Every structure is written in structure tokens, then in C-alpha cells.
Image: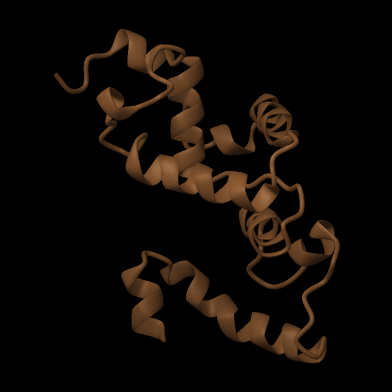
Length: 144
């Protein structure tokens, strides 16, 4: 198990797995319903809690990782740093974007797939359906 966690680049999370397991066992395996309560579980932060609500329970909840920050900074044309995902203005933007009529699970997986396949570290702007609306896609020639 430890090797699997380390191979994903999640070594810092390994120490929380045992604590999380104990906390869930005390709850008879039941994950809390409220996002705030999920975040109280050991090792669970805003991303995991939001992703769990959206992807597992199909509830409206936002989740932001480095890939989402990269996508939004390219699309809207703002500078990003390691703290962008924690800044209030950015979280307000994300909340606005996640507030829609689409099914949360479908939107969440689409977002994850898009940031993995199209707006990845090496952007594939020529394949991007948003290129004409995207600041980065319009102003930067990534692929010919």
C-alpha cells in the first residue's frame, strides 16, 4: 500500500490513511453527509471533500487542484502561483463556475478529463474546443 501511495506522489498522505481508516471505522464506515464534516476527517481537505461530494455523491461541490488552476489561469489569462487555489478571489471564481445546471458528477469528470487530455501541462491547443475563447489559446502558439 505504501508503495502505491508513494508512486502517485502522495507520500505526505500515507500517514493519514491509518488515521482516516480508524475515523471511518468509528463511524461504522459512513462518510459524513456535510462537506464541512468530511473535511474534519484526518487528511481530508477541500479538494478531497469537494471531489467526494461531486464525483461520488453527485452533489454540487467544487474541487480545485493544480490542473484546475492551470486551466482557469490559461483560459482567463491571469498569473498563478502555488497559492492561487487558496485565494478568495479565485475560490469565488471557482464557486461561480461550479454553480450550474449540469450534473455534478458529469461536470467533474469532464473537468478532470479535459485537464488531463487537452489543457495538460503541455497544452494541446489545436485540439481544444475552447481555443477561440481562451486567452492562452489565442495568444500562444503551442502546436502548429
